[in-house]
Each structure stands twice: as C-alpha cells, then as structure tokens.
Length: 243
Image 1 (cartoon, rainbow, N blue to C red):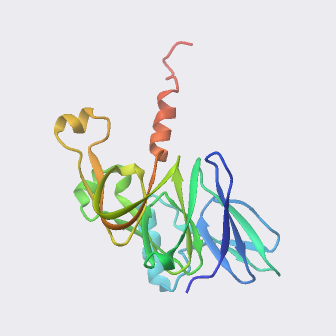
Image 2 (image 1 turned 90 degrees about the vertical axis):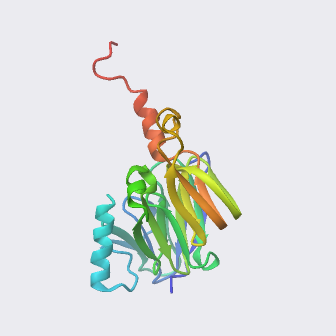
C-alpha cells in the first residue's frame, strides 16, 4: 500500500512544479535533484531503490538496471518527521508540464519514458524495463528504455513542452519515440521502422517510430528534452566560426 499523499500542481508558462503535502510519517520518493524547497519538518535521505518490499536482492537488481539505463541508482526519500502537515516542492529539470496520476484508477500500473518519472508516493514500485524488440529499441533512441510504475498511490510524470492526453479506443498512433511520455498497461507498445530508406534518412523524423495501440490513455509531449537540446546546440557557434 502506498502512502496517501496530497498534492497541487502549480506554476504557469511551462514551468510547473508539484507541491506535495505529507502527513506525519508519510514519505514521497523523487528523482535526485527534483527538490525545490521543503518545510522544516521534512527530512530527506538518498536510498538505493524505491523502498517497496523487494528485499536486498530486488534493490540491487533495480539499482543495476538503473545504472545500465544511465540513471542514478539512488532515489531521494522525503519524510514528514515533524508535527502537522509538511510540504515539499518538486520540479522537473527542464520546462514543461506535470501530471499527477492516481495509479489506483489506472489499473495499478503505468509505463513511462525513463526521463519522464518525477516522483511518487512511498510504496510505489519503480522498475526499469527495456523494449522487447532489442534491435529496434537499440536504434530507437529514447524509446528503448522505459520505467514501469506500479502501486495504488499518486505518481508524478513530467512532459516537455505541452502535455497531450489522448484516449485510444482500439486504434493505433505512430509517434516520434521521444514524444511518448506514458501509457496505461492495456496499451501495446512497439518500435517500428519509419518507412522506406529515403524517409528514414531524409524525412527528418528519425529511423524509427513508436506505435501505441489498444484501448486506454496515453500521454505525449511536444518538446522532448533531446529535441530541445539539439535545437539549442545547433545555434551555438563552433570554435572555428568567425565572430
């Protein structure tokens, strides 16, 4: 059972943050570096794992998967160790929107991009998983590594740019691999080639596209961080350019 935390999503202009309210003894877990501020009764500790009942071997295996995926092996645990209600504000590392997902209303499980996970109630299981088709996933960029969130509490997921929520009803969406934020467990996820060789190399959409099909909710983002970083990098003069 996950801790029953409360929250508000605040902020405007693509710079939102989650204000999490903790009763005495409650804990929220978050990616390292997500904290903006916390009130005096909140204590925090970096731990290897999400704190769910996985045992020592489960924590070590989870840490190994996070390391393989290029993620920090530690998550920060924020606990209300004081009296009365306490607060911790959490924000993503780049501009965008935050969505709070009640996993108990989403079948107990949501799959998201590894970089999309921000925070969750203590008791939520956070697992790194890899695309089933290893060959396609290896060249599919951001769509290769996913994070599975399991539990019955709140989880917070971040989208770069604008957040798009779409309800699939037995249909299929083809999406840039970096634009997938999250989807329900009822959705089938795959990575497929973008088309012919000319489209793959000169179409500007990458060599592979993600496909989401089935019935359920999916969340997309208009500005994945890789696209933002590439746009900024293209505008930076090289050292050889004249002033």
